[in-house]
Amino acid sequence: MANIGKSITLKGDLSGNEDLVIEGHIEGRVDLPNNQLTIGANGSCAAEVHAKTVVVVGKVTGNVIASERIEIQATGLVNGDVSAPRLIVQEGAVVNGGIEMGAKAKASQAAATQNAAPAPPFAGEKKALP
Image 1: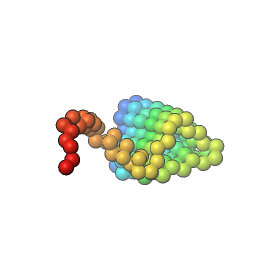
Image 2 (image 1 turned 45 degrees about the horizontal axis):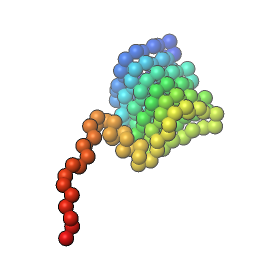
Image 3 (image 1 turned 90 degrees about the horizontal axis):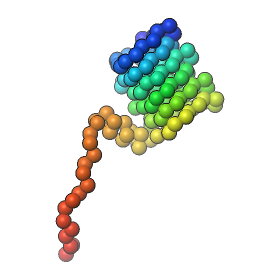
Image 4 (image 1 turned 135 degrees about the vertical axis):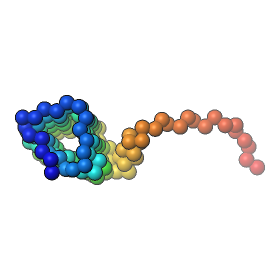
């Protein structure tokens, strides 16, 4: 498990393939698609966050997307949208944004990772059925 200490500030994109605990400050984008990301009590993120599992004890400003679950503990604060199949919000936690869960959340995650343009509407002729 990697750890970003409370005296560390990172600006830019952060990606990896191991669990990460952030006690410092991150600005940019955090991408850990197969791992757990924990924003510790002293941690703060001004970032778009993508991970398998996200645990928020500190503060996140930006959208949080998880492929498995998001847990916002009692001291956690999220200013942004959250999207995951499962969401745990403890009493005292704050979420200022939209919440998307279930199959709809999985579909939006798949669409976000593909970055595909939507198909144009069908413009064919109308034919009468026999």
